[in-house]
Length: 592
Image (cartoon, rainbow, N blue to C red; front, side, top):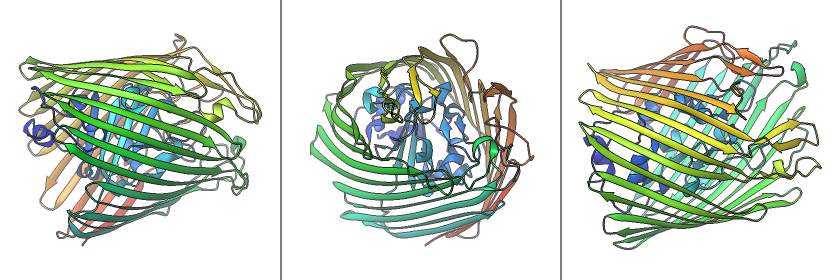
């Protein structure tokens, strides 16, 4: 029985907000898997993980990948208009979540702190096969930046036979979304092409802008992927143009123009019945120009990485051994950070007890050698109750821009972290309930202290976050009901003040109902108050209501209607920035 069959047997419904990726309450068999690292069964069943298929994502009614992330309380997305999107997973820092696309990090090499930032806009929603959200430190399997969590995205390959899809949406604020995909595949090989465009006139981004002009967004992404069962290659090209207001709302035609291209090569081979091997090579080139009409030329960056991964089955246990090398280069200076890592992970089943443990040895050209490790277990307690626990450590080296911003070189230390997670979940006839407790402590956290153009960064002591997550997944009278709540209390150097842009409480309720050819969903998101700005200001909490429905005209054609912020709430995510009021989008989707 494979892991998908196990999940179905446990009654996992379409949209999962539980504390574990698979709701399996018994021992989990070990098997070899040619997919990416998080697909190993014990790792997924022990860590606090969410998994979403393409159908799950479509059911949310999301228009973009950022729309989808906004529905997940623990991700804590901050996406204020005219500003940089940021993830504060479980109350952690924005640079402590690692985002991977087909195993390759899209975190920004050139950002102030290594956060993913505009990399989130390069992810085409209709090209996603699967999303895994791993909460808590993941440095052993993933490396640097995986302190608060990992978002791992797998894109689609060519389907069996020929297929194509065209979809478009139009809405308020002159919003236009176009998606095109075409693929062909069989047992000998596949090819897939996708092109996605998103644009909107937007709204006036800052409250201090007396010109009251609109700040628009334009994003497009194109990807080509070819391969067969042993090899695949992909090329992605993406651009994002975001208009924004200058200092104190002054409007001088400010524009952020971000460009990115990515090449990825994968080779995977089953050596024998006990050994699978996989090699991934990738290179990402990025640049960002800004200022009036994007005339301020920014630095150019390149990330080159290679990962060799081996899965070895030993009886009813699985040993994973890997090597990785990542080079981050500021090609405008030049300046390079290089990390060479050895990592191993072992998982084994002992009756009702599952064990997972591993370590990673990191050798960095600037910051020396470090070792991180993890230990986790899952235990069936009876009465369909499962207990899980994890202890992880993590490491993150300063980014290129932190070490050498402007003309100033800073003597920074790497950030380190310790993370504990304890979870309980129970299967009922009507669904499942999950509860997770987490506690994380980080040392040598890097802080930006200002000073343009010679910006200054320092190690600012200890950052801690602790909290609880609750999830309920139910199917009642034909309604799929999902409730998720995250409480996360964060502090810097034991201060009682919550860090900026981190509401302590985030809740999301979704109710999905299929009736004949209609599929409708109601989503309610609640965020408590937060702090932001200089001087620090308390931003009030808010509740948003989104509704969407689609109607299948036939097997090939669907029409859809989305209304976001149905109640037209006036709310604030970042101090001094406006947010969208009620917005309407109407779409058409045709497959052939």
